[in-house]
Image (cartoon, rainbow, N blue to C red):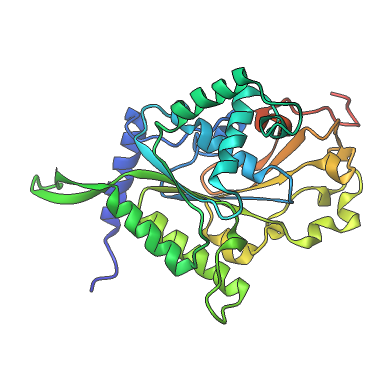
Length: 331
């Protein structure tokens, strides 16, 4: 079997890609946030992997859910599906979080645990559900091993494919398989099952390799959620005005296994939750628990850096926010 190809093929593929981008026939998946789109290639590219890391309660699932929730309206010209490996949260709970964002009401209220849900608001939930179920979103709730995950994705992509007749560079017709673009989310890398006798790091290395294999083979935009290493909670890193306030690539749990495979790595931080008032060496003034910082730890095809957002956890939504003033400049 031939294991190489001429660089001529690579150049032909690249020209086809950038021509398609120029014509608007090939686009990235726009996210709900201008700052995220600016840091990437105007959104998440197909055939890519994005890792989102953060402490518990930092907003990882919220970011993932909002991308899925708004992606179909933000990308009306894209013909894509979504497959969610929802191993940490039941699909029912994710749906309720969607109602929360839509109604701008808390999860507790929707469960009648913070005042009784009114009939009027229940009807709004019904109408929202009718709208959302129109979108092709599928859910896997049982935790797979890496091999099982790979098999599920292969089956899913084949099920949502079609045959197409195309002409090669010499004008000769041939039949090729055309796969549907798919967003695949994994709500926690640690929740993938280990094989019998398999160590955690070995599983994560295998997971990274399999995702890379699948993203090269299929037009998938992977979104993987990850915890941070415990070193992020060392007291020195929570002192005001330290570089250690920032999330670094080494803070991503299983960084050696996942980082090299990822195209984009985003670290989430809520400084006020760690009692940080002046964030990082720039000493950004942090006012309140709503301040969410996204650190673009790795952007293979974009710009790194950090950006500030406002997180309304009670209504399950995140919005772009202005960069806060610094202690030194006040502006």
